[in-house]
Length: 217
Image (cartoon, rainbow, N blue to C red; front, side):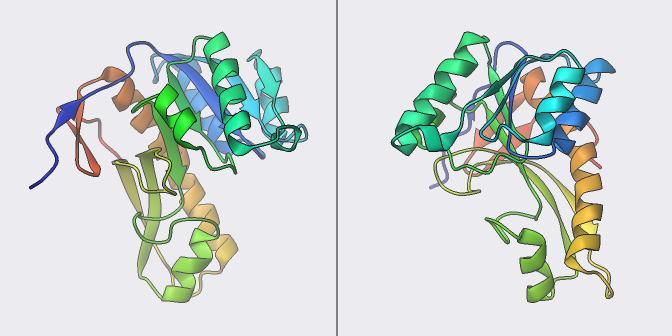
């Protein structure tokens, strides 16, 4: 018997963006917020790496930043609870992972139920985890792409919000395919965030159903 459709959505638009690297998806989100395409503010950018390039980007735009290094905490649960406390301090209601290279456990997911988004460089459920583009090439698929999904404690397994298809060319390398998928991510992620904020959606099983979704990619 399929899971019942259950409505849920964040009630306010204060984004907390988690990063570990250069922050290219953070840039896409911040640009969309500035342009009025996402009815939200970026309340805080948090990184587990003090050298992450996205921190400089956030500071240039006047966005508050915080560094919480996972190595400074004894357990994964301790780190997750510290992240929760920092996000709550900034009144975050929708968490957006943007190249955040840490798994989030049950305590974190329970603190923000159906309010944590991630973007992954494949058409999930194909090729979860790291090096998804390499996995796609090694498997010989003709199309790959990007997926925005809600985060659960299971790796890349939460309900799918939106997807964009990217053809795999015969002469693609991991770098060229990654670059084209990243371009699709930059278009897809802000639109998915906007749709989730609007609140006209329901979760049914492992997919998110929108009453009036915006055009994808």
